[in-house]
Length: 194
Image 1: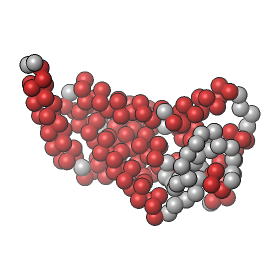
Image 2 (image 1 turned 45 degrees about the horizontal axis):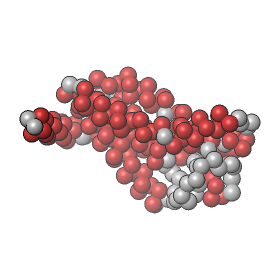
Image 3 (image 1 turned 90 degrees about the vertical axis):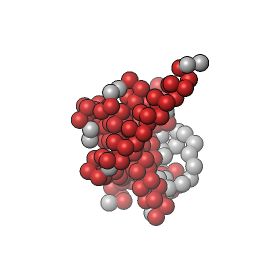
Image 4 (image 1 turned 120 degrees about the horizontal axis):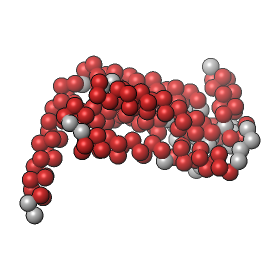
């Protein structure tokens, strides 16, 4: 299995194919920065949405938080080296020499996307974001900081966390959403006066 992981990495990494400057810049942007569009999207859903959309945003945030915790625990228990730590491939960005499995970027991405996909009002956007996650997954391999198995592990961890939140966390999500709405109203009352 590990040999297959290495072979796929070498096929997808930037050293394996002809690259032009624009492709490398696009991969670096996608690998490092695209994921940061999702948290503001959750804030937008909260601010512009009704109670159901607010609940979906809270559920997706909780899904991502659980996925990142589980991913961190996996990385601690099984610290799989990154490709550049093994002298493999071509590295396009600087990265700490820490555990690679699962990818934190994709765990966050798919934690949010699959969390949204598990909620009826945001199912379509969640499924679209889940599929779109293949772009940063490819980019993280292309720039040389992850193996393909790291992406698969991120997806599995995020899917599990989204399922746990959907199956067992609904009361907590509802309570957190109600508390958030009350806090938002209190802040608006306090600061809208002045």
